[in-house]
Length: 420
Image (spheres, rainbow, N blue to C red):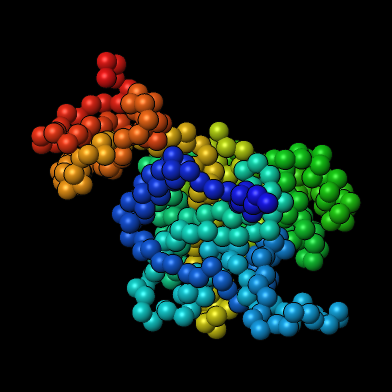
């Protein structure tokens, strides 16, 4: 019986051309982030299930891949609680593992600590186009810096990294969880409804004001006057000139914290070369955000291509003392999808006949590599023209043909040239 060779649902195999694009994107991003002083770390794919279920992962907590304890019997009693069977889970993002990592290693890390992570995460999503159960995230975080310098640097570094990878024309959307709380209080919404209120506001770009109003009334339970106040406040703030934003916010919401206005003014002054706007409907789903939140959009992408924010309370859950923290995650898979191909690279095939001494083949390949190109020996087989066509399909740009009587390196010829 023939085996099913398809990968697990929601995952995929990546062929060399696809991996080449990913390598190119990662290399460009890494170069920029290192220039800003971020240091690469790695954390395990597995975390204790209690940590992953800690109440700060938003909807992603429902998508955790849980791992059974070792040593379980083949069968268990029907009424056994799930918590008794599971002790680990696959990480659903890189932020929760980072906070544990920082708590465990803080004494040996520079302060503030600029972290850079790249790796796979897993979510039990319903597979769809562009939505996978295993995908890669690319994060930078600053831990230990309480001022808006962290937000400004993260935004500058991330937009620079996207540009270096070939993604131009992005827009940064900025909001603040403290602003959202002030908005909810100003409207008269009951405190217990705020989380559902924020989640509904985040849907504005998808369902419009009619849909948001209906959901706020029917699912959140807000009365018409509260909904009208929220809608009027948000509409009045949309499109505000970033330079005038602090004053506009102070006039619109007298109860907003002074720190919110100061931090937004710092962002406005610190990012003269970045296209950004204040988006009063931006929420982001994670429960651990405590201050500014941001997303990066691109006209060719159906969703954001990067996002993040400040999470000053999360590390304290491991240390017992709060640590200021702010991070940004690039949507690596979406970035890759926006790029059709990676920049061309030179690859040479050393095409050798069966009577060519192996020492000659290896010596020629060694000599050609001195030019810094990718060089691979390939045995001659089949029709010559057909094999050259296959080499071109595989990404080779030129070849040398070695026979037993070939002297030196031989003649190098470009693939695709006429008159071979």
